[in-house]
Image (tube, rainbow, N blue to C red):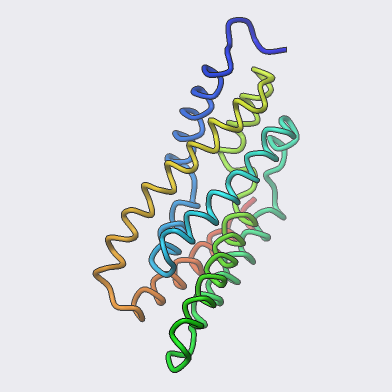
Length: 198
């Protein structure tokens, strides 16, 4: 049962605030989001981030206490592999000689796939998910917590991508590809480091 005096709107607002703070303070997906925003279209990255984030928050809110025990050695390894695959897919560029409309369509599909994989398969058991799980354990309000947590992720994503779009307009295409791919490689190496240290 919901805690005394906790209403749906209050639970959603509390989840929004707690998850937003947790994500901004200690979540590395900010860097992946920024680097992918340099390489792919804003709308594609944001859509992939929103879908992956909503799905992960649904898992966190439904599994509650289980997700709080989820952080471990193998999650770092899965994250590392996903980051390295993303770096490879970002680096492999379309042939500039191909038809422009076909290139745009392939780029959209590729961008959605790369971005969704980068966000969905990395950072499981991160501070935002743990905060959402803990709130569900306290309030027993799964839907309200999921709505608040997902909105927090979307606000974070929009803010980071807005900065990325401004940078993208100032850098040449090849530089963007190098920065985005290199950033994913660095994140992969950090994940391996945490796996070894953990």
